[in-house]
Structures are given as C-alpha cells and as structure tokens.
Image (cartoon, rainbow, N blue to C red; front, side, top):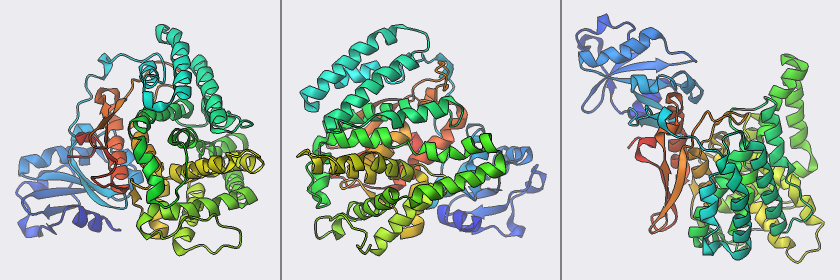
Length: 500
C-alpha cells in the first residue's frame, strides 16, 4: 500500500492544487509532502519513510498551524514509528498509518505523563495486594486459594524491603508455578522454560523487560478476570463445538506463562552474533530456526495447532466437533494458511508462534506417555493454550492477515486469546533487568463491569514520553483485531489509548 493509499483511506479527501496552496507555505523550514483537503479541514501532510524525521520537518509541523493548516504525518511502514516515538508528545500531530492491517487516523495524544517522577515505585514485580485479593475470591476454589494465601505470606518480607528482591521473588513464583503444573496433572513437568528466558535476558540477550515476571504479572492480573467471568471462558468451548471440560484457571496459567518463551528463539540471533560474529551468527540463527521447524514434534504441533485454530476463528462455520489431524489428514485452505502463518512468524523474528510450539513440544509428549484418566483433559488444556497464545504477537496477526486475508479474533470463542492480547498490550513493567527501581507500574488493576466488560485502571505517569506512541498503536492494533459482541465478554481500553 502506497503512502497516498494510506492517507486517502485514513483521511478521505483530495490533494490541494498548487495554485490553491495557503499563503505563507514558502516560508516553512521544510515543505510538506503535499497539501490536503478533507471534508472540513486543510492539512499539511508530512511523509515519514525510514528511521529519521528531520529537525526542519519537526519545525514545520509546529509552524503550519500559523498558516491555517493542521499537520498530519503519514507513516509508510510500522517499523518507521520508532522515529516518532520520542517526538509524539512534543509535536502532537495527527498520524496516518496501518494498524491491524488497514490505514487508521490517529488523533493527537491526549495524555499527561509529566508527573512521572512523583510516583512511588513498587518493591515487588507482582503486586502483593493483587495476590492477597485473589486469595479471597471464593470462585477461585479452595485449593488454589490456599496456594495464593501461602504466596501472599511469602511476599510479606519482600514488601518491607527496599533492596533488590527479584531473586527471592523469582523463587517464590517458581515454587508456585511448579505447584500449578502438578495441579494441572503434569507431575513430571518442570518449570525451567519460563526461567530460561530470564537467564538469557540477565545475560544481555533480550529486551529491557524481564519476561519471567512479566508473564506472572499477566497471569495474576488476568486471573482476576477469569475468576469473575469464568462462565465466559467455559461457554467458549460450547460456541466452538469443542465441548471440552477444561479448567479455565489451568488454561489461563499455561497461556500466560508460556506466551513469551519464544523470545528465546526470537533473541537467538543476538546470542549467535555475539559468539560467532555478525555474518556467521545470522547463518547459525537461520539454520537453527529451520531445524526447529523441521523436527517431527514441531511438524506435528504445526498441524494440530493450525487445525484447532480454524474452529476457534470461525465458530459460525463449524458444523461438527474438532478431530485432531493425523499425518495423512488433508488440511483445509484456512488451516494451510494458519500453518504457514505459524512458520512465517518463527522465521520473521516473531515469538508468539514459537511460544506455542515450545509449549506443545515441552508437554504433549509427557501427556502421551501418561496412564492417568485425566490425560485427555490435560491434553485439551495444553492444546487450547497453544492455539490461544500466538495471537498476542502483532507479527503473528500480520502473518495471518497475509496468509488468510483476515485476522479477527472472536472473543466469545477465543476468550483466552482475547484476554492475553488485551492484558499483554496494557501490562508494562520495564524495570531495569537487574532489578533496580527505575520504573513504576503502568497497569494498576483490571476491572470487571456489568454485564461482562473488562477495562483497565492505568497510571499514565508510569510511562516515559517515548512509550506513549507505542501504547496507542499497540492498543489500537489489538482492538482492531478483536471481534466483540455486546452480549459477550468485551475488552475496553482507556479512551486516550485508542484515540477517542
């Protein structure tokens, strides 16, 4: 899609002829890409291509108001947004860019982050108050509530300390995670995969977020919603004709705790480049991804997960219960597109698909060896988590649009996928990887309002100015990918995050 296509779809109108340009346009430090007339407004259009927005262009954006124009910046590619992230609050322009697969108009930001320094910083990554509140929810069940009570007690000394508590907190959460796996029925499973990501990131091979704690934050924030609206998560099994009898707390745990383990694969190139050098490292990384996708367990996971995704994405077209495909099963065109999307996401530096494939490879072979009467239920729990988690990754959603023509997540059928995409786009603890108190918590609490509306209480002051644009784009991308019905569970963002 050309920049003109993005502009004309996001802001219908027409180019202003040269002879009709406003007086004073010649004095602008940098001339706009074009002048534009919409229904009731004249615009100065600036084009962003590449990773830089010049100082002259910045001054022009600020000065066009004086000649009766509004500035709008057209962003040719999503990757180019990084050039504007630090300028977004300073310039406060309108923007036209592709979000959720189609051109969107972003109004100027309407949020204040100037009081950031005055906000207190938490001592723990997961709020102790949240765990304590969850332990009092009667709908969670006595067994899980007792474990939450124990975890709350363990957190008590951490809440009083001002030092780095991350290693102690990691230990408590690791113990809780291993208990959850046993409660699911995975007695022989270990909790080493989420921990592996933390080790990589502590070694400098990752981003500024500690994804071990981030995943637990997602789990506990979302656990509140699952407990309040458990019927929505149970009903989704009927909508899709799966009719599986799974524990929604178990599905949500696996979905939340494994959703980012694919960062190990996504960041592998950084590891190989540090060891082998840039050129050799890229070759090693490409070979490793190819080997991962060619393994028999991964091939099986690709077929099974893509097959299961079809009735989840198109419940109205599902006429019979889902049957797990065999190696000889013929996949439908939709399933083939989803399978290619999973592979493309792994190959294109995504992490959502890789996370699902890792969960399948980590746990399904163990389940297949079980003699437990709960084996089918455990397998269904794992498969539902595998089919839900990739959709939180915007790269995977883009791959699905490319390979199938659309990516709309029906929340009534894909409650876990919608829940993860929503909470993951809001929850943001980017405290220094070493545990220093350099950041504050953005998501304070998820709220459940009647009838089944999930919203978020957030603290904008927790964001740095350069984070605001990403939050706006990310939330709009998720919202544009969700297919929501008023009579089912819905997710609602703060108005400033979606430009309302």
